[in-house]
Length: 476
Image 1 (tube, rainbow, N blue to C red):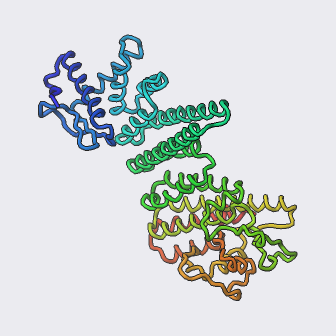
Image 2 (cartoon, rainbow, N blue to C red):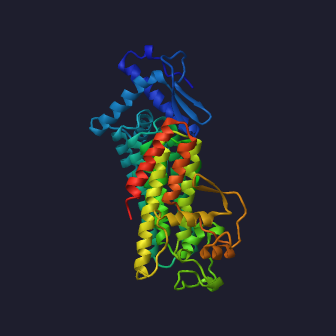
Image 3 (tube, helix red, strand yellow):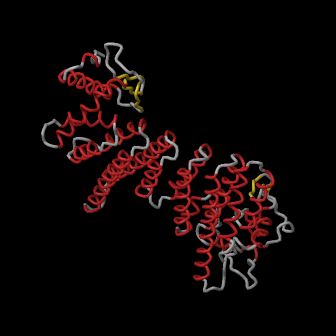
């Protein structure tokens, strides 16, 4: 590029104006030449050593030499303030360029985002362009609260537009083939937007540890763009498994995982059987064969080969149980692999507390719906549950501090599995995961205390045991 001048040459106000106008134009031209820029940054350079532009574009990376920022930022800032005070008029195109430059250097300047809101409402900007600008700003300032707030505003505009289009088509009557195609395109567009938001949040979380703003935005996006979509939440929970395993001290990431778990449990507990079956793995799917729909006998056992255990008849029960089982296994693996991280123990405490309350509500709801004549044996404080869990999990794998790992072939001998309900599951090829239980948690803590030499790990284990005894153990 041609030169933009050095700071020593920009002594007068007019020279500074010319210098900054060229830099703003260089930034605009850089986006025109390469619309796929995916990262911005400052290049440490105290002074201009060469007679060239301070804007550097290499592949998809845009750099700004630091020496020009002290001239560039005050200029665009004052220009925008004068415009807002109606002391200086700017064309819409100039407003777009100035706000873009300003927000790339200082994304927490609320006035600039407000100006872009007005431009977007006037149709000068499209929502995707503003989301793109915010994405670039977050590569340099991943925690910028104003940027996240503006993204939510833009996403709300997109959702309102989609909702308005949907209502207008319904009012027009039956949709033709063209309307169906447009509806599919609209749905695909929302899916892409959702995927892009997840990617932006993930990148920002990697750039700034415990990025509360990024994780809060991610929760907001799912609540407003994927509410009730079990598949999206389940995919998020699965994809986050690797992330939390690589960021074991990031409490915000584990808090997001707790949110996903709560939402999935709520949806699966209320969803019809067909919905829960589609989200579960084949080995955990209840049978739809009417010959397998048995009834409970007076002694509480299942009736013959037609029997299906009581809890499996409840929609989503097995899937929810599997979620809790997998999450507790993840906690166990991380605690044993990375000793001394309090975040992992806090997450385990939250998951077990969530299980404890879900079990109580599920049991109460079931007793109420059956007139109090039947109940599901899910009492996590009952020592008999731990024994039943051990029997039910024999042959499925080895037990490491109360947590099970599938290693061996499934046992089908009724002698080794005296529980008749487990025998019926095995005959059908279905074996529910073992639920968390208070005795198994005590066993896990004892194993940690016996095998670990880390003082922090032992302190966290004792605190967890105390919490189990004082909070969970005292509740019915």
